[in-house]
Image (cartoon, rainbow, N blue to C red):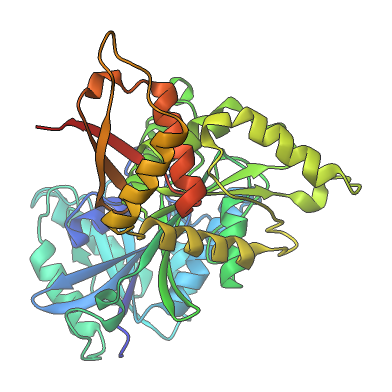
Length: 442
């Protein structure tokens, strides 16, 4: 399988890189906001122009010399993208002209071996084109005037861009995309170590990792092959209570995180071992269960906890007590920083994925139902004796069981819980939400 060419968008903050990114891939994928510094991790998406496929990287705003912890981390990510790219698009802003920061970036790009193309953004009309002359001072060849917001001159720009890309004869659909990948979302409150966990799996600083909460704002997909299985890891922004999400950026980050939950197969929810389990941890787990996703709970930062031979047992007891309605979720104590049991947590997630796909034969289910009813018959509904006649599994991922009865209204929540517990005791379904539906037998 031949790798597609790679294009990286770089530039100082707030020149419109993410708007250009969205324009090229033809969907609103990157968060866009007037506030500078919104994009932090580098973000990858496949792109195509006139039948030519390439991978596009969006990067954070490059601020040379800054000691800000985020801006230092962003610079590292930009350097990674530059090293990876076949062509670099240096995005500038016609409304501000060339700044000292642009000149610093230009000097850096003059030293790279990759091809560089200058895009002068926010040229919304022909009058703005008169200001393009000064951008030749950057020393990076003929610049292109575009408007990422309106799409002005994008066709000519993309023709020139794709002409610079090496012809690697990338197939329209890569082999890796043909494979059925397991999508695993890494979820949790801010600063529980989600990006550190992804980095521990990858063995590289693919995501920005800092000790401050809220570092990851977009959901970032990373493909990897593990034990002959194709996986997609989705590292997400920390989920917060919606009432606390005040900034536009935080709002869209939260939306992206919930969207990541919707499109994943398995939710790996991380909590911080150094803190008691919080209401928001429960909310995230409940959201995953309501979405019908397989769930694994990782108790991270276990290396930072003072322990004796009862610590893990007591900790798990406390968590189980707090999560009574989610007792089916498996739990593992890990340390992303020390790389303790990080792959065991991934193995557990894949085991839960396999459980999501399980289908129990109907005859086996009905033998089970008969034995359960003999042990504990459903209560009467008024004067009517409730009968459970037949059960079948209608779907997987998550499993849905339909039970036919003479009185669906007579099955109360406590008996539903009993049936679910019995199903799990008999058939497993570790980490998998179970759906029960009761229908009237004609």
